Image (cartoon, rainbow, N blue to C red; front, top):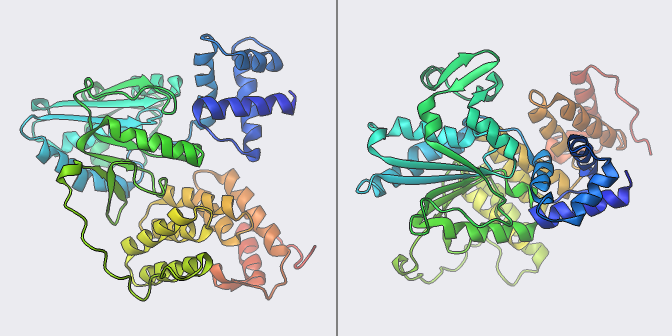
Length: 437
């Protein structure tokens, strides 16, 4: 298949679905094209030309292709920090606010095979003494129709239940050949429908006058370019009730969506939509403390001051303040790697391995030669993606071997020689020569 033709398909996927594929993703795209061309009985070149011609017949096929490109791993109760925040803060607040009507509407956007909306159903079942007395609707949407078919069946491999407690497993799942079947009552709480967040109209809770109380949209924006992220994020509040909430993945948004305010918790940031007239008038801003960067500094000095302030907060155990400094810097300049690096450390300390993994990946995107990021990400991938871990370790060893042994690697608090020796010993390898061109 010609690279030029593949590049045209790459632009098509970006324009129609908002999914950004870099040079390193071309092999994934090529594999997806080969798989779908075989499934449709076409030669790869003919398949690409047919897809590019457009028309009603190609729309569902483009969805199938994009599904192969974005179908990342999910599992029940993914990100225990955010799930705990939903369980103890967000959902109780919504249940109190909706006690009079006993009606609640939730939307899991980018739900993959249903693990997230079904996790929400279980949380509500635990929180409500009489769930049947409430009118609850949970909607799960995804661009991948095959994933939605899987979700409707409700049958899951045991590995996808690895974050489910034994009590929940006994209460909500039944063991079957090859895995577990989710309880029928939980499956009945969730409705699934295909949706392209970039191009399709937004769904409504039960019509235009009954919007959603909570939208969970995690690990979706990582596939989009910055302009698409902002466009989609600013659309989501239109589907929310005026006091509804939006939860995204860690550091996926640089600023609150239009019409929403950020509420910061230790576990994560939640965006809250509120009536404009209900907001109090802003109070005069106090002068910035000495630790913050005054406006008279040039951009580089400002960024260094914010970095020092963020690190000071983190060293003092003030994680929320440290994260706020990082996000402020990211809003000013999203190409700085240090905020993502510090947020990755904070995520690891909070036990959020998935969030840390995404943040370290962002560090490597911005700074491909960051040795500490290679090693940190390799450690996180060791169990779930051993091939990826080996690749990352190999890249780190290559970078280390090019440095003189005495070169300090400050982020790791060790020299290049010490790191090379430690890493090769841990992997059972012979260390390569140092300082090679």
